[in-house]
Length: 307
Image 1 (cartoon, rainbow, N blue to C red):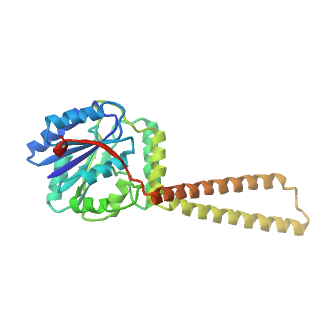
Image 2: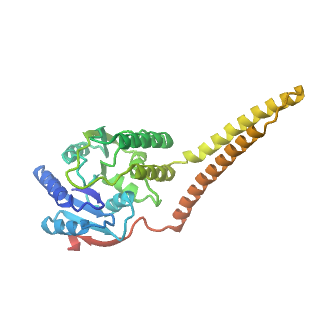
Image 3: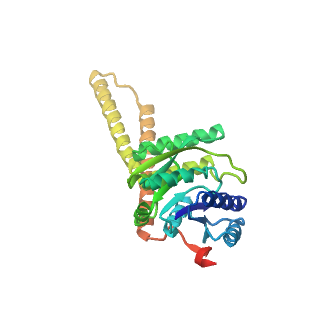
């Protein structure tokens, strides 16, 4: 059986269509399935729509969070609740082409344990959003040492991969990178991002920036190494200015350097404060991990044995 994990946040207009589209597709392909909708604390009628879908289709299950915990938490909740021999994670808006699930499933039958959905085309986006997305992927790829430029959350995972991810204890998780990091036998399926037929995207330039910062710090220590590089650069500048000042002093040509001193002090102070901010952010992440709070809290379930 295949489990399709579908995180949803304020997607009341898409639940019924997504459930019907996926059910028809998987039934026609003769693949046993469950559709697992994870309501990430929606403020609209998303949960009511999931409950209605579960009443009309026995293959639909729903999990409702007590509040919004974020997409990463929703995906991992789906992995923990899924019962299938393999799991596909996809967006509720159907921008991930449903028909590609069949292609992924057949590759899984051939023995592949991670089937990555690789973007060929990002679809229709504004210039600002495309620039923000490209900048995010370039930054995160260099930070974690993996090419994330065409990656997405749309992928199929074998049960052993799912079990491996579920055993990982950290609270601040980055699904895309972790599912790549664990290894296993991989294959790729290329797809083009489809246009939404209802609702609006929940991703803005600001949310992408926050997403990048959160996931880079949860998966990589690169920003801490940047502090060391900045310190080395400032040391080099200090040595150069020291040599110049000593030569000018010996030659009796030393000029008043008040402006230069002020500029150097401002630059140094700014770098120190920036460095403390980065270190503080990592300490706050460590604090969150030490508290050991759950990634999410489930308030309700429906479908399956929860009807």
